[in-house]
Amino acid sequence: MSLIRRSNVFDPFSLDLWDPFEGFPFGSGSSSSSLFPSFPRTSSETAAFAGARIDWKETPEAHVFKADVPGLKKEEVKVEVEDGNVLQISGERNKEQEEKTDTWHRVERSSGRFLRRFRLPENAKTEQIRASMENGVLTVTVPKEEVKKPEVRSIQISG
Image (cartoon, rainbow, N blue to C red; front, side, top):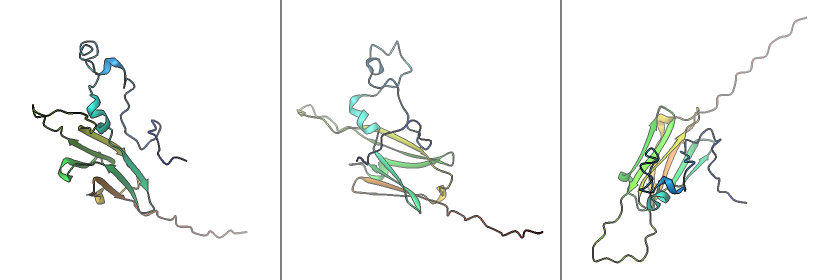
């Protein structure tokens, strides 16, 4: 049984941007820029980092988001709330400077920007969000409002 949940376009809490043309040759080629000028350009070196992996779990007390951002400092990551209920996590890893004397044998680490958005449920206390970073893992905790139990009042039946 796999615990990894794939992105779901029908998830009401997800604001992940889905590109239906991802992987098609006209999306990133320079010759296609005149044919499809409105398509966003992404290179393979930034594609992996652009979709930073984030786990979202709900506990009885809070919604907890954990993002893998290895090699980034807390100053290079932003956590924001937009429109009162959209959690936005973004950042950027810069590419290493190349020296003319260097010979690269393999480049597998990604660089570039990432941006993830999550629509928070109504019970989220957005004014009390906390974020911390340790060992390349960003943890964002969004406390939840206590569930108020409905008041039940007994009614006398006459007759």
